[in-house]
Image (cartoon, rainbow, N blue to C red; front, side, top):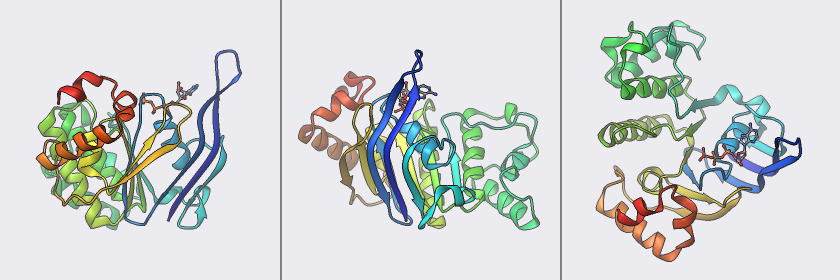
Length: 257
Ligand SMILES: Nc1ncnc2c1ncn2[C@@H]1O[C@H](COP(=O)(O)OP(=O)(O)OP(=O)(O)O)[C@@H](O)[C@H]1O
């Protein structure tokens, strides 16, 4: 359903010369599949999501969603970024409605989603009054309210405390399983990827391309600190020691864990 082939994506460097961010990157995802994209800082993960989501069209290559070029399909795509990106002057409900046609059906869906995420009491609150975890929940509701075919997530749970991040991951998996959306989830946290994905695609250092694909058969629900996830991480790093250097912005942390 999602078919990505990026031949070349460059940015101009300070001198105006092309700086290669992605090259020869091929990636597919089946309908309803949860794919995590893992790779070192600067390998092009955010660039990949921007291209797939149609936010950046200055690229050599193609992205097809359900057989159609991305230009035709952006309305089927939900986004969630590192920052919740809520409008401070809009209420929680209106932030979610912002990406909809605000029809009665959309209002109903937004209210249901927010209630299911424990936000039923703060529909009329402004984002500045919410905790970081609550703001991410609003962003998660906004991503799902359009009933996307494809959900693009760029390290959405970064810099949250561990229990909050785990709760949000569990909510994401529940919403994803109910929605049937295909998910492309970028992270450089290997255990987060192991806890979430049907398949992990590892990118090389820039210019990024897929160097390893790992299908996962672990039962759900899973969490990053599950014994099975930790064992798989240890096994994977023993088999592919090069990933350790590539992945960790803080390699000692992964080794210690
Ligand atoms: N707007 C831009 N202009 C110039 N260079 C850019 C721009 N955006 C990204 N780059 C460069 O392209 C490469 C890929 O960047 P990108 O942000 O996609 O990587 P990333 O894997 O998401 O990094 P991180 O994990 O640190 O967020 C990097 O070398 C980066 O410096």
